Length: 352
Image 1 (tube, rainbow, N blue to C red):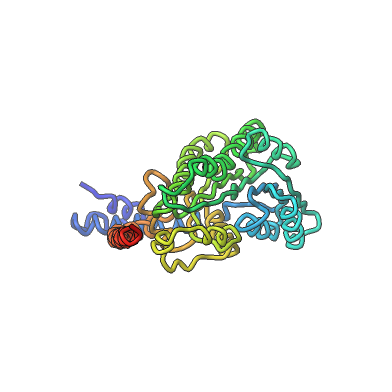
Image 2 (image 1 turned 45 degrees about the vertical axis):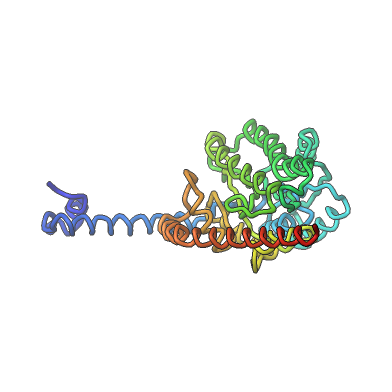
């Protein structure tokens, strides 16, 4: 009975050694050969740029500030034609100026569209005003209003779903139909759609009951459309940034509960520019679930389900580490919540 290794050796110039290895050594060496072959092949896959934007039309929602604007600037430097979509015209004009200044060529176009993407009709209008069929759609619009569940007004849940989920869903649905009706030639690079979820789409905290579910919904939508995109040569991605230092983050800090701040701890956070570069690196590598820092990567590996891996060996190691670390993190979170509950009870007792 010949092993896989014996067959491989027989087909090589060293066929005289076929059948000379015992079953254990043969199995181990076969695994080694397959691993090396995989790494070589995967390395070639990673070296290829999977995100071609030069001369292509890129539409970015939430592109007037924060991560969206940072990505627009970086993609303008790569030669893309940019359309940014948001509500505030004054912010759009200012952002468009910065994006124009970053262009690699004067032939590139930079446009902006003011629209409320929480409306399906407005999303369709915004798409109609983009000046063509998008090659890339980046859904970066979103906001957070952190409060403890008991203190949160019910209309905020509706608002959060509109701002974080439907702003992405409506523009994607309209774009999807347009892309499907106008397929690219077979030799053209694929089109891309990326959703922006959050670290909270993987692991959430007290205070984010109106936010985290909307971000988890985006991840689920991305998982669904990743498969459907194969029909139309549309590559779907979902990114999971952690804390981003933006004007929106500063507003969140003003209303964020003390418990939420304590659970988040000394999260160093990232600038919008750092997040943009990390996300673009993931897009260049062809990643489906894209994270921007180590803990996000560990969370992804603990929550990936049937989603494609980015790197089998690295993901396996991080998955094992996550299995060891996350129980301790959960214990620490629960301890802080119980301590907070005790302090709140003491406060109420004094008030009574």
